[in-house]
Image 1 (cartoon, rainbow, N blue to C red):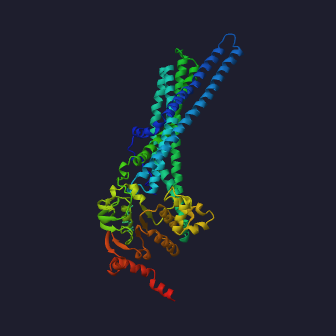
Image 2 (image 1 turned 180 degrees about the horizontal axis):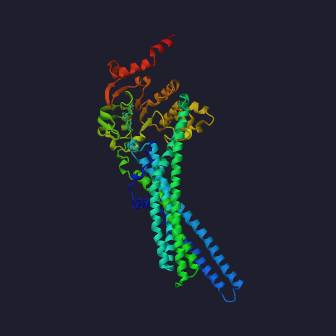
Image 3 (image 1 turned 120 degrees about the horizontal axis):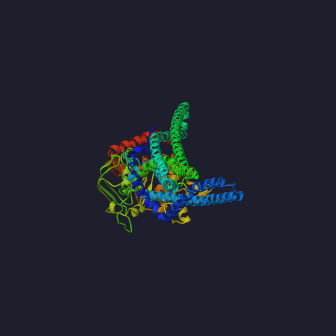
Amino acid sequence: MKNDDNPSPTQSKMGIGGLIRKLLPFVLPYRWLLIITLTLTFVGSLMAQVNAIVLDRTVDKINELLHIEGGFSWATAARVLLIVSVILLGKELLSALITFGQRLFGEKIRINVSRDLSLKVVDRILSFRMAFFSADGNETGKLQSKIDRGTMSLSNTVKNFFIDIIPLFTSAILALCLMFAANVYVGLVALCIVPLYFVITAWQARKLKGWRHKVFGTHQALNNGIMNIIESIAVIKSFNREELEAQRQADLQMQSTEQQMETRKTSFLFEGGKTFVEQIGTVLIIILTAYLVLTDYPGMTIGKIMYHVLLFSNVSAPIRQLHRIYDDLNDALIYAESFFGILDADNEVEQSGQHCPDKVEGLFELKNVEFTYGNGTHAIRDMSMTIHPNQTTALVGLSGAGKSTVVNLLDKFYTPDSGTITLDGVPLQQWDTQVLRDNIGLVLQKNHIFSGTIEENIRYGKPQASFEEVVHAAQQAYIYDQIMELPDKFQSNALQLSGGQQQRIAIARMFLKNPPIIFLDEPTASLDAIATEQIKASIDAIKKNRTVIVISHNIGQIIDSDYLYVLQTGHVEQSGIPDDVYRSGGLYKEILDASARSMNADKIAHTMEN
Ligand code: ADP
């Protein structure tokens, strides 16, 4: 399966420096948290070396006791052990507190940064023009996946940085310094092992990168597959294709099993290799220190064997994590690019003019308008039309003729390539976008009911409206009686209403908003005849004294209009008063006759007469 929304690792052009630069403005507001976290980290790293130092001294002390002439006293031995125990336990307690604080603050930074990233992206998205959402790669699913993965991997990077990378590497560097301070040769051995680790890790990361993306792709395909099965269950059953679907899932599962096993195998092999290299380092350090002790090298006591081995494990521990950190960082680089692409898309922000009159008449004039969508569809060609106030204008035409595009242009969702569109004589670009849209009401075919109560959905038209106003709007839209029959009345879930009821909720919202201009884009498509008739009553009520544009395939709504424009492939083919246009023949007559035939109008009339 193709995974368009899964950016491949080769797509990343952003380097680590670029990533840090981009993230910095989000982290800086928490600089005090950052300073506390880093201080705790540093103290924690110092504490991590205490075990090695204490064990070094303990072994030497016990060795000393063993070699006291005439034997050692148990009281002295007990005192040594008591001091060691107190130091080790005390250190552990302090370490636990420091780690707790460091993780808590690190996590607080991560959560805050993640929240700020999400808020920022939502802010940006709300400010973008519509063209952004129909651009390639910005479809709902892909955009959501870009944002989800971007926020997650970026906040993970922040967490990795403060909770994993910095503490681990501070501890490693401190341990290495202590090794050098104890003995240069021992320090050099430890230092030589480190690059070997890096080489193996880089090799491992390279090997696993391809597999990780394959595993991810198959996982998504499996999820999508299950979703498709659930969504299309009726079709699958009616065609008896259960076996075929089961086989498809089985193939994907087999593929997933193989890929997961292959990834695990590679991981285990490399982990084994790394442990072996670490062990080689430990062995070399034991041999070297033992040799130095045996040859009476100044300052080398038997305790140093333990000391060096423990310090070396502090050096190698973080490097063992390198692979995971490398993977996370790689992901962050990939996802950061598309995420910051959204934040930085300044050219996508909607432009607004200044014009905000006290009263809007509602006279639209289009002159020689041309418009092409981002994907190259030339949707409007040399279009000129006038939409008069206090009239209902119907846009008629076959699917794809450009009717909805005209509405999109009038609502300033898109800007024409050339030509002019004016409202009350002022070009749309000069209108304050918010004022313009405050004066326009839009009823679409569907997708306009939010999850929430009926009251909330109607109130969306005017958030400060009183409950009485909401009720009045519901009455005007002829939906009040039906709402009152529901168990929870206005508090019922709006998404559970039927299509026709939802449509009238949208119309009630329009009554509440009370705009002078109304666009109805196929408001009764996909509704049954009874619902359509009920909605017709609400639409007739809302039409009064407004500029109304109605797009509909419903003959009743078209012939009720005062004026109509017949569109074909993006330009005006015919226009005029419905009856006149019909009489002049052409496309409108064809459409109307075909509609009447498809409805079997003659037979209906005959049935009704009898
Ligand atoms: P109608 O409303 O008459 O059915 P539309 O205005 O929806 O027609 O579409 C006109 C043309 O523009 C069609 O070819 C359609 O495929 C295309 N189109 C519509 N919306 C978009 C969009 N968001 N992005 C790209 N092309 C679009």
